Length: 152
Image 1: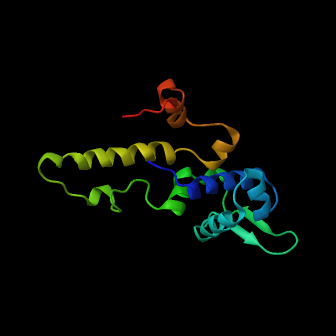
Image 2: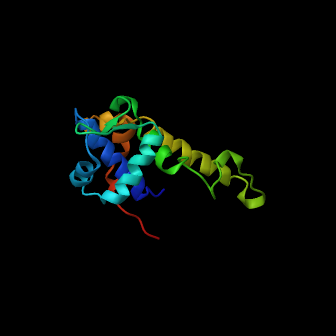
Image 3: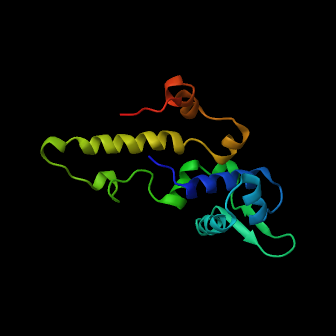
């Protein structure tokens, strides 16, 4: 699974908003996280349409989280920014049908989605901000092998 820059930027911007008690300008978010301001503007628009941030104009304006950070799952953010967590050729895994030698490939794609859900639907923005990660995360990230890139 590739996490697109758009989703990474969204999570980083939301973490900055979660840490702030006040509205934050797009420029400040871009500066804090070293993000391209123009691209971040598009990201914030998507987050607003997705119901994760609200925006206000004026001298006290800017962006705020639309919900408590402990109510925003990382999976919610990824779905707003990129669509379904696991798709195959743009289709949901349960919609696929394979024949012959590939008959059981659908089971693999379903398992991939279930594993992504196990991690991404069990960690909130607030937990990431506090470093209070649930066991669904730490059991994978504490494995030394998880930190090693594999090549063919």
